[in-house]
Image (cartoon, rainbow, N blue to C red):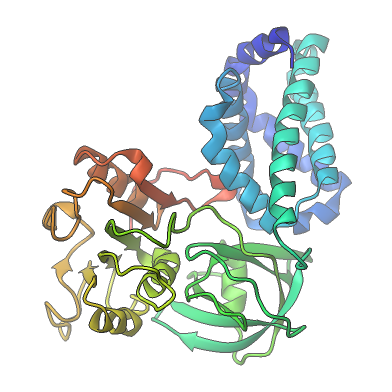
Length: 413
């Protein structure tokens, strides 16, 4: 991009603010009409709700806003590239997206989309696509023999709570599985007859690495079967193991930074956000871990029956003096015992925990890993930073399209 084109992109910020979502709606409509096969790549549910168009509009705005400081977008781009790689996105698909995005801008803005603006946005998209293609290629290059989607059979289904079930996925070809870093996810893809397309969703691994299987743990979404949790509900609809699904290579940059070291680790989970953190807990407390550093798992759930992995967590705690677990339960049952089934009533509140013994705030190198709904993440991050924790020591898993999440009032975990 030339300096002049960069300047033009900056000048279009107000335009994107006003027309961004309209542009992205036209973009998706035109592109998917011309290339219906891409419905298998995009989340059909988020298309129908308008969420994906809204997120893309926010991404375009963020890109224009930071066109002179692209380093500010590095965390977002890193997350998106891992998501794209998990969906096996190809360079050719970037060409399709670029074509229909520029055409959508022309259609919505009309004569205001001058040749100069068109050239600037064509160059800007090309530069961004080049960065992402290169990053995704580097991820693919690390995959060894595992290329593209791979057939896995669901060999076991285990109920973990009223809402969450675990699915054990074993490769049909019988070849050993590569290890993943605790905290990472895989994409799982199945054909949805009612939609007419393959659909893929990302699920964190909830066990320690194994060469024979991956375990994912999935929350059943309430309501209609083909509402927001379409694939999750299809999995929960399975009565017996045996179905074959497509799985992509493990991805994700929300994972343990280091498996060695002695500094404390605090894992903070809300609801189904426990899945990657129980993988971390099991690994840090296993013989595979190089050290026995202090680990505190703080887990908030609505009820004890909605909470998953209680027995696994307690087994880890009993076997490892360096590992402690604290449970917040919003609405305990009359039969639940304080101090055994839970420690605190209500939503998670870090102010109710000891600053040194529970949160290790006195340790300058304590790492914090948070996973849960976006309002939960925001609240925990604010609480930690208000206590002087530098943001570089806080890692949070963001759920949502392209790494963007909506900030909505929190209802339940």
